[in-house]
Length: 122
Image (cartoon, rainbow, N blue to C red; front, side, top):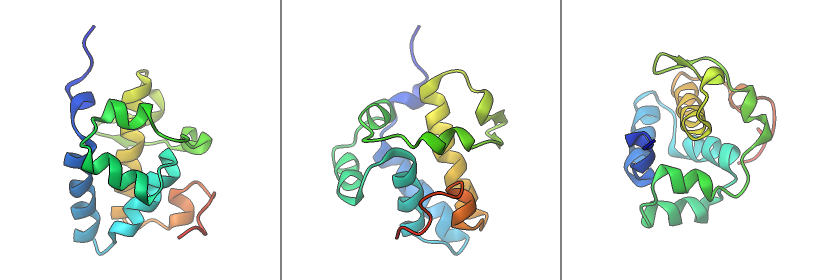
């Protein structure tokens, strides 16, 4: 069974859209980086590398240094689906990232977005 089309999209094509979304709401790129780092374990250099290499989302998540175990605490609706009910693990990871960026754009506190963990990091 072929994967979803989104799996082949490059992280580099989605990342600037995330940044634009939060900047329109008065938030910053550093906050996008913080939630993506929290979720995946990529550091600043790692994010820069996957953007420069234009890796697809499937590879982005497969090579993530350390998916945060608290990611399972991410709940709610994104694109009309409850993220906690998405069965495909890769699609769920993509939607977790979407949900975190949405929460940044909505102005939620970082401690809440990061599910109470690691919020003191830059």
